[in-house]
Length: 414
Ligand SMILES: Cc1ncc(COP(=O)(O)O)c(C=O)c1O
Image (cartoon, rainbow, N blue to C red; front, side):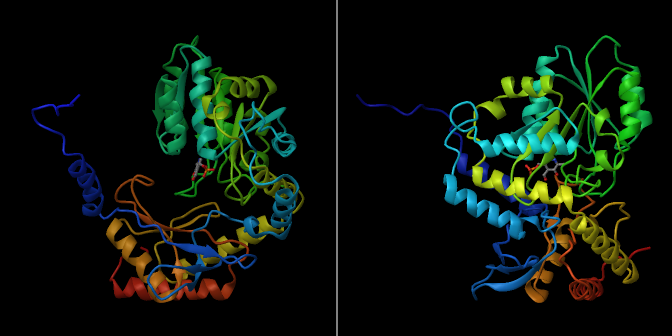
């Protein structure tokens, strides 16, 4: 039998794909991944494989391993021990063979961290947001989700996939949130979704005030603490622990890949809600569970940070020090109340150029941040100093930036 090709106009697939990439180049926001290896136990020192002259030593300034826990001896030892005890992978979904004792222990540890009945692990923070929000709104017929306009892409994806009605309130503008809540039918289920620390601007939500509105309008609350867990609060329970409001949040969400230094995501909530997500969320059910090696590392990290504030304190000191050095040098550092130190550039091509010069000439690695991670026209360099970035590294970085700012005739701070 011969198969004849259909006649008529044909789609030129390669042209469509090439045009999609060309558009990114034209806007100056084509993403280039920098090829690095971190030096075990010596973070923020790393090696860079860009270029052809072999690995070059660099200092990493943009890692979300905020407290260098991914290099902590206790974490590495726990992972080595688990690997030698139980092997590499979990071997299945949580339902079919992949529910290891490490997973059970870590969920108990995370529930305790946030003072909740239960917690549930996912393969990433992204998946935990997407799966939980999409499922929650499906279980609550007619649910309306109120979403801060700067919520992370994973929350937006979850809300979209839930198929429910969405109301977006202006970033951290609680008067606007109240206006939207008040306009809704009191009888419909409502969920307010927001972050505690907004990772690109470094500002913080007023959790207590949001919970007051939730009480007043009978809404549930969903708080993404991805950039705060491990980092804030006496035991690293996040801004909600620091502000003593964790008990007022219906569902807390976090990552295990940033301050905890490994990988994975989770929610913590009351027993029934966690059971609902466990039982209904496709993003939890139909995927191989995290490797027990990773989970063992996270367990060591969470336990360590519950008992030790040394890393948190060191990180806050480093962030404050770097902000003041940037300010003294006249660099346009954004005013943040958190550990995040962004320098506003406002142009994707210039942000990339600064980043390229820093890497090629100074051995400094900071990735430019552009649209869609931040709105167009607010492209920036985002520095995340940690407890292991010392004074000499900060001086070197500040001097390098000051030199580049003059060389490229960039705008200084007002
Ligand atoms: C606010 C926020 N939520 C969720 C995530 C996703 O977390 P993960 O990296 O663990 O997937 C991120 C990641 O950058 C984030 O910034």
